[in-house]
Length: 342
Image (cartoon, rainbow, N blue to C red; front, side, top):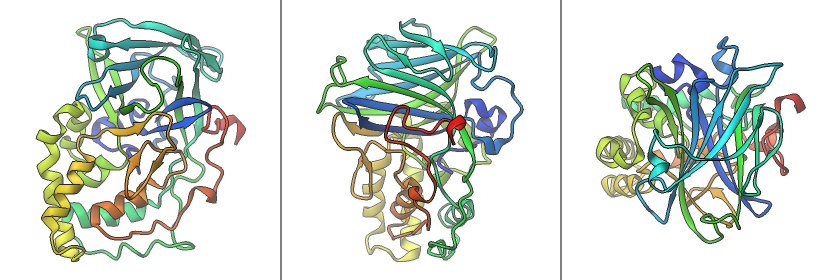
């Protein structure tokens, strides 16, 4: 999985479990996609998106540690098979303030294509899950990284790997921000993450999920522990202090055991510098690609699992699957494939 059901907290209500985040370029805009609620959870909640939650895209500008822009989505109760929702834009100090109100830039219902006040587009609803992986491979990788195992991680090749996510769906939130819409101009360096927050009885907001880079929590944190839940409640600004040393030790250990570098500590330090904090970087207006050499956004078709497995072990780990095996995305808005069109 990428972040599918990645902690006990996420499994309490899959509507709040962010499975993936994507950032890429299309139609002279930056595209932000957040997926939640995998159908593999088989939960029975009547409301597709939680009506007492917020789903937010967080954007950091020019290497800053705190968000400068937040796009906040809030959904109402379902009626006639759809949910009403609004999109707010918050900037400056308000972007990181749960008590602040933003400027409403769009209102509508799930399944509709909306136009924002910025000239962008919005869509929310059930969609084909673009993520692909054989979960038995993740189990083997986790045993190797987290528990000191020594599995053959090259077993999953074309014709052997089984796509666990074939036929599954998620609920997608899609937002486009035109290059001409202010801060997200071409050439600007941004870093992004997505979060879900649930209203508390005391009148505040509790962060339940967050996602930046793919596979971080599943690879470096046991999905059945309270530590995995706590990680989803924190801010990326604290990642280096909270998780940097633990990730360093895990990577150095697996690289040392597998003999993929004669300087495992140096490799581990370099990788931690690349993946901590858990933010997905992107240069606005450039071709996005989540790759071995560099992360520059993430497209729907990018093979995130294969890349992250290989980086974590400093060795080529094939996944045996590719985006073209099934139709999972499209080149036109909303870029994901609505479940009604599969």
